[in-house]
Amino acid sequence: MRILSTKLVILLLFFPASVGFVIKFIGTDDLAYRFISLGFFLFCLEQCSMASVDLKSYYLAKDNFNKQFLSSYYFVLMVTIALELFGFYGSFFSLSIGAIVVLLSQVWFNFFARIKIKVENKVTVEKWGVKNRLGELGGDFLGLTLVGLWSLNIYPLIMASLMLTMTVVFGLVKYGLSSFILPRKISPIR
Image (cartoon, rainbow, N blue to C red; front, side):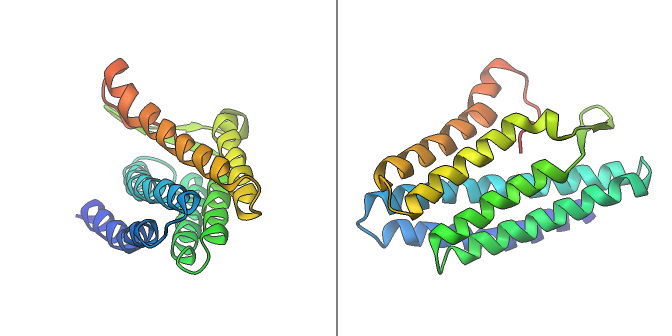
C-alpha cells in the first residue's frame, strides 16, 4: 500500500511539470526552444519513473537492512527529488535556469548516493560510489554544458539538438535497446 501511494504521489507531483513542457513546446516557433522543451519533457517522465523506482527500492531495502545505513541514501534521494521538482516547475519561469537546476540535481545524486539498491529475486544493497558513477556524472556534466551554452545563445540550435539527441539516446539505451539485448530488468542508470 505504501509503495502504491508513493507512486501516485510522485506521479501527481511530476505530471503538471511534464504538461508544462508540452505547453512550452507548442507555444513557440523557436526550434531550439522546442527541442529543449521536448528533451526536458522526456527527462521529466524519466525522472518521475526513477523517483518511483528509487523510493520503492528504498522501502523494500529498509525492511531488510540496517536503517542507519540507508538513512543517508534516503536523504540524498529526497533532496534529489525536491531539486528536480524545483527545477521542472522553475522551468515555467525560466527554462534555462530550471534545466540547470534539474541537471544539478543529477550531479547531487551521483556524487552523494553511495549505494545502489537492486531489487531482483531478492533485495541487495551494494556500495556504489563516485567511481562507479563516472559515466552518469559525465552525462550530467555534458548536459550542463549543452544547456549552459544554449542559455548563453551560443549555437542554440546545435546545443538544443545535441541535448535532445542525448536524452533520446539515453532513453533508447535504458529502455529500448536493452529490452532487445537483455532480459527486462530495472536499469541501474539514473
